[in-house]
Image 1 (cartoon, rainbow, N blue to C red):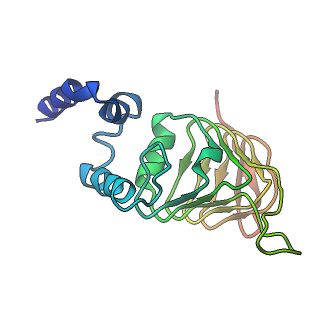
Image 2: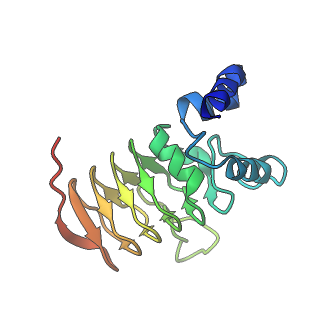
Image 3: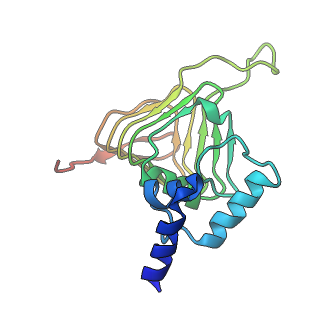
Length: 184
């Protein structure tokens, strides 16, 4: 059955969206087809997250998707497709590295309101996240934060300041728990 479904997908790869889902992002087999269908229906028919150019879980929201710069590798796109209840507010920009993995409920908030005029967005640096970063469930990353490569952020952490490469961080506010010694 698996060979048959793979042959059918290979046959329909002339259609750009199927080519991306099957060849480029390798989502078929990892993401249930029903979830992909529901997400497509929410974007195309209901107009929710219509400007997003990659698969996104139907319960997640992205504000200003054009200000998110990311690599479209299977790990990152798979996280967007599978992790629900996420909120990405990119008014000041979000820069994501390769192999960015995140769990459900993650919030990336790149701007605050201006204190003098609540209708204005306060200027801040974009959120920068390095390569091979894993954000646990319910983690919150606040404006202007830079997270280095090979970092693990614990579930429920609130990241209010920047962190270097190769660390494990957790807590509210987040702090370094230990070094993440990865053999390269």
